Image (cartoon, one colour):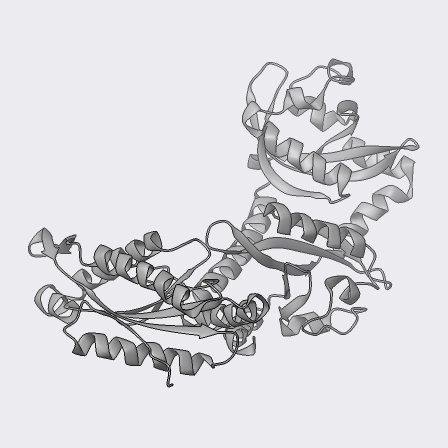
Length: 444
């Protein structure tokens, strides 16, 4: 998949983001150059199982479990790893989706959290020193076991509005969480207790003993407390820790930039449809699936009729509105597993996968979809164009499409050949009077 991923990996490298991508089978599909600078990783290459690459790092099994959970439930997760030299890494795992619901794989970004982990380990070195630091800490610290408070430091007692620790000891911690945030807190507790995945910093609302609300940043980790497992929760009043808020905001901005880079690499800015890079990947996947199932697939190339006249009469703003509406109509005509791509200008591609093993039946299935598309696209377009001198102007425009269809099976033809077939068929549709559907006829 080099042609699909080169630009994306380059963008992530330029942003100095350490990232790996895995497919649904947890095999490496691509990675940034920064991955090579992480010590003790087994040589990373495309196709290797994720577990093999991270085998030398403590926490490899937890990473595999967390990635599997992300692939199954599409919920982001964090895992902490340690290499033999003692350095710590935080792995942030996010799903990579196709459309709104289909998860194709996961992206793992890595950051060095050695300084934070060393501080945590220093607290565990000595129970006496740990208690002294916790007692005098400006952060509020609770320790929970079986969901109830077994320890609170003075700062936590103060911020909860309690008089002494006895006002809270033995009470369920759930009662001190605002009802709106309890589902999130329970999910974080599940990840912490079942997956041994630390609960990272998150904003939520706590309840004081008098019922009033306090907004906090909280994080939690699994510890050994007085010889038994327990949960250490550190939290702070957001208003008193602006520095921490700035650090968190910078982290969020970096992740937002990474998300935007991923989106822009694969989507058309105007219509939000997948772009040519995605088409290359989807056609290759479809050819592989066709080779396995023996089913035909179809690629349709659509060119809008009367699009230039709209641009000439009302400007590019009107043309952009039409293209956005066309994209939405096309998506409504196909299955969720099919792909709609803006190919460029006023051209679109529709890829239909897994038709029939019989060529005639496949042609009939593709013809039905093409006819539906042609009928939907020729319906009038009600557009509202804004102009500084005239304000908002309603426009009714009629626009059809000339459609060329090419069937293909297995990997008998290259992507270039398939596109040439569809383009030639579309040209014949235009020549036949527009608003027509033409199929590529293979040579006898």
